[in-house]
Image (cartoon, rainbow, N blue to C red; front, top):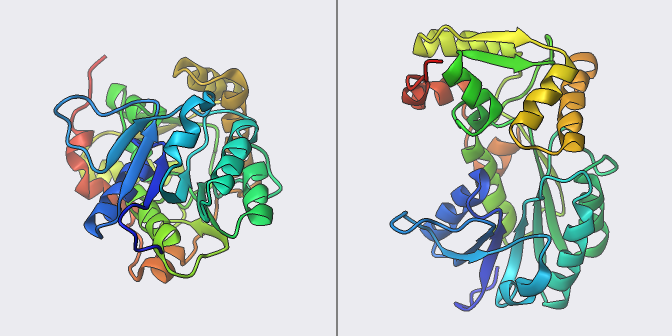
Length: 294
């Protein structure tokens, strides 16, 4: 990694779950971060690193944002074809002499898959240093009131999915960020994909049981149809095509075991075990006790 004080790491999705955590890890190590996103910190908010306004669909300031950058963390926009804007940006970054690129993808989506697949493949084929993080579903989905699960847990105590008895290797965003930090800063680039999971694979019935056990909240997993799930996703503001894709992933989790896996990536890359769901819920117990009554 370059030592020049003028170089920095660009974090797209700068205020998001993983970018914000990576920014803190970079600051702890004295590495400069430029956090780029559609939203900026509010006055008075504690902020880590430099913040700039960034929109994938408006390239007017992209060259400026890439100045003095040697590595980029890539968070895709909510689109079925993010490569349409991401690949031109990566080309600009290559022209600006950026060497390392780390993409946040999904354990459900391989290099030849939809959505993130084309960007994954482009990095593999065209850049000198790269990694693709492929995490399972975030544990933070259960504590974030802006996420469908976090919101429904607070409103009704319920989780709504079309996964049936399908299992998922839920992972803490802190562990994803730790792997991402190493992918961005280690002297030797990974030049590979990294599938990131927690220590166990669980059904949503299992998740509800853990929440009940740890918090006392009468949580339950409500099994719904893919069509009903699509409607719920669209109600949060997601485009119909993207909402349908997420619902289809639930079907594949139920029928194909799409997310039923556990890897040693967190331990191998960071030297520590990933956090379990029970540990995560225990550490965030207070967020489950702020239930909003209907």
